[in-house]
Image (cartoon, each protein chain N blue to C red):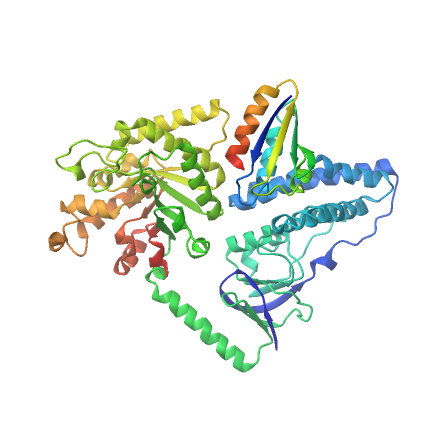
Length: 85
Length: 514
C-alpha cells in the first residue's frame, strides 16, 4: 500500500468540477484509492460522497492507494492533486 | 405597486410582463401505482439511461464550457454508485420509482446542506435538477413556457436545466425567490447576460403584471405607479446615454481588454467585456533574478481562465526585446534593438524558457477558453517552427500523463511584412491580432518613444489602415478572425472605421471600457 498527504490549495476546495475529474481519473486504476479527511473516509470513485466531505482550501487530506498498480497510481494521483487542487 | 429588493445576479435595466412559474409545485406529483419490484427496477434503469442520454445531448449542444461542465457533473451524478444504490435500495424497499427519486433527492440534498459550506449548499440545486429530469421522464411531462413579448420570469426556484428550456431569447429578465449568486443557475444567467435578481418573497406576483427591473440597483417594481414609471424611464435613458457616450457602442464586434497581470482581472471585469484580447505575459519576467517556472505560470493562467468563466482569454507568449529588456534573458549588444531580437525571435535564443511557457499554457488550457498568440511574426515559416515546438511540449505532457489541451493559435500582425503576407500566414493560424503600436512605428519608420517625431506620422493613419485592410481581407478569405489590440483600438474616431472594415474584435485597456 502507498500513501501520501496533500494540503488543498484551490480556493473553493474539492468542488464539483475537480471532484468529477478525480472520479474519472480514479476509475482508470485497478488500485483502490481512499481519501481520508476531516475524520471521514471515502473511495475516490464516489462523486457524491467526495463532495459531501467538506474538503476546503487548507484541508489536509491523506490518500491511500492499494492494489496491483499502486506504484504508478500513487505517483499520478499526487500529480493530479498538485495540478488541480 | 409592489417593490422588491434583491441580490444582483446580473445587472442591466429592463421592463416587461411578469410570467410566474412555480417550480416547486410544478413538479410532477403524479402518483404512480406501485407494481412489482423487478418492474420498478426496470423502469428506474430506463429512466436513468434516458436522462443520461438527454444530458449527453445537452453537453453536445452547449455553446460554452461552463454549461458543458455543469451538465457533465449532472451526468456523473447519474453514474455515481452511492446515488444509484440509494435509488435501487429505495425501490427494493417497496417505493415506486417516483418516490425513490424523491427520497434520493431529499437524502443527498440534506447531505450537502449539512456541510454548512455555501458552495456545497448551492450544489443542492444540481441534485434537484437531476432528480427533476428523472421525474419529468417518468411522468412524461415537459416544462412548458408560454412566452410572448418581453417576459420577466418570476419563479420560486430555477434550475440550470429549466434555464436552458426557457432559452435566453425568451427571457428579458429573471426574478428568483431562492438560490444563491454562487449557484450554477446564477453562473449561467450571468453568462447569458439576462438582468436578474434574487428577491426573497415573490408570492404576491401574478402573471401579466407589468415589471420594471433595475438589475444595476437590485430593485424590481410590479404594477408601478406613474411616478415610478417616469423615474424608471429617466434612469433607463441615463444608462442608455452612458452607454452611448462610450465610442465602442458603435462597434459591432466583440470587445476585449488588454491586461498585464492577474491583478488586472477584477471580479467584475468580465461583466463588462467579452474576454481578454491581450495578456502581456512578459510582465511576469520583469524585475526578478529568476525566470517564472512552469508551476508559477500555470497557476497564473489557470486563475485568469477560471475567473473568465468560459470567456476568451488570449495570452501572448513573452514579448521582450527593443524597449522591454529582461535581466534573466539578455539579448547581447544590439545597434538597433527595435530591429533586433524581439518577440518570437528571442525564442531561438532561449528555447527552454519558451517551451516552459508553452507547457504551462497547454496545461492551463484545460481550465477555460484559452488562445495563444505569437508576437513579431514576419512569415509563415516562423509559425511552422513554433508549432513544432508546441507539438513537442504537448507530446512531453502526454508522455507524463499530464492533462493538457491544444488551444487555438494566432499571429500578431505588427510588421508590414506580416500584413503583406497575411494570406499565406492566415493559412497557418486560427486568428490575427493587429498590434497597431509597432505596426505604426514600422510602417512610418519612426521611433514611437521620441515625441519630437509625432508630426511625421500621418494623423489619419492611412498607410497603417491600408495594411490592416489587406490583413482583414486575407483573414476573412481564409475563414479566420481578426482583431485590433494596440492603441488605435481605443481611438473613438476610428471605431466606425473598424466596423466598416469588418474587424471582429477590439481589445482595449480596462479603463477605456468605463
